[in-house]
Length: 179
Image 1 (spheres, rainbow, N blue to C red):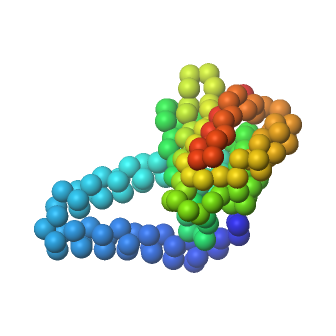
Image 2 (image 1 turned 45 degrees about the vertical axis):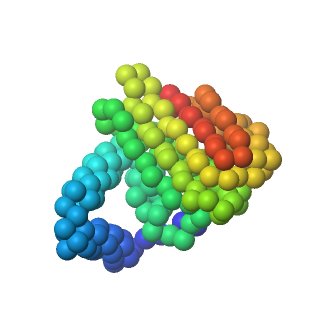
């Protein structure tokens, strides 16, 4: 799933994404759909703010994973959001990256492609604690997710706790608390 990115590959993928976005704006302007072009621009601005926020958490492994995940051939789309005041979460980078990569890899195996599966990762920076929620929408093989849930509870680092988990046929929610 994950490979090591070299500088040229990173730049090529980033340039490709930007050109796609510009083509969308240009096409909507050519069709005189200025409202839609403005929506796309606003979406680009919001995505750029989230990219900056996730990059400022001092978690380089997690940032790379989130920033580059959709550049690969995956069964579902991953979006992310950072809510709250940015701060240094570097002490959690390796263990959070390892758990997230394990989760994403397992999710690839249990996703049914009959719908448009989507995973939203939200990093909430609260006053004292930080929480990360993994909210998946799409058809799943529930039994295999339950098995992952049972084995991963012990595998989470001692400073990371699963405070909530929920799984049904078409929805999955994990909330981890750091600290």
